[in-house]
Image (tube, rainbow, N blue to C red):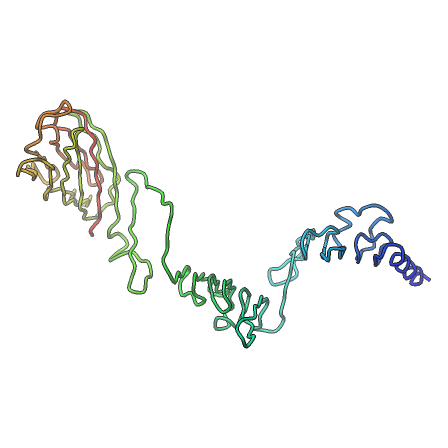
Amino acid sequence: MKKNLTLAMVFFSVIAFSQVGINTPNPQGILHVDGAKDNPATGTPTDAQQANDFTVTSAGRVGIGNITPSSNLHITNRGTATGIGGGEATNTGLLIENPIANSSILSILRTTGATGIKQAVMGINPNFNGNNGVFVISRAPGGSDLAIDLTLGNIGIATNTPTNTLDVAGSTRVRTMDVAAGATLITPVYSDTNGVLNKAVTNVYGTVINNTVNVTAGATAALITGIPNAGVYKAAVSVGNACGRTTIAEYYVTSNAFNNAFSIKGIDGLLNTDTTSKGPVFTEVNRFTTSVVWSGVPNCAGGTGSALSYTLTMPSADIINVTNNGDVSLDYRIILTRLF
């Protein structure tokens, strides 16, 4: 009797409204299945009641878990996280499973060429990359603009066989890079013959620390601190005035705190003067103190010819201080690059 009543209701629904309702006398679309039979006899089902519904609208749209699909296939998931194995859960919005080992799970194909051969433009295919499985997106059939090795986790750009965590088969552009704050240790990156990025020589080679400090005439300030211990460095120090005169001098620095084995020594430098006296004169007071004098600096911006002279001192292995031997306040800049 119940079956006859249901069929009658469906028949009435088809005749009166050209709609088919299964388990509901109140279909909300051309085809409406109420899985739990919990929809009201009139009115619009609630969200909770729609959770078990399947609907096809007059526009040909299919709704699963909702009665007003906004696309050709619209799935609304309201499940609870109950495990079903393999790390999945019953509240997964869409679950596509192929129980046959090493078989494609999902492929989106496009026919190309006169022979009509179908090739993947996007898919998840365990056979694609040595049975490791790969997720691939391509603009052209058979291409690989983006590929993810589903076993190793490697990501390939313009290659479907990535050999590193990120494998780019082409040029790379970084539009924005942060500038490290002063006295922050920075490690440069190099590439080998295969284009794989590496640190060069050792983990410390080429690391850079930099800082800038303003020092008044006759005063002493820390030019750089936090120098890593047991290293050999080359330091470049620059100071200039408001008249466009700029100096740069190089120094060798060792920072070993063991037995107080730290030292600094001037190497060479350059002053952009109008004379032939372009180099500095270093006075190596002791192994951890060096003074520099520049000749040919014109009186300018309140300073005399001695305005750009200074002294560098290492009171300990991790600090280089600068003393302004001139007669105006100046900015001193240092770049410390580790060699060994």
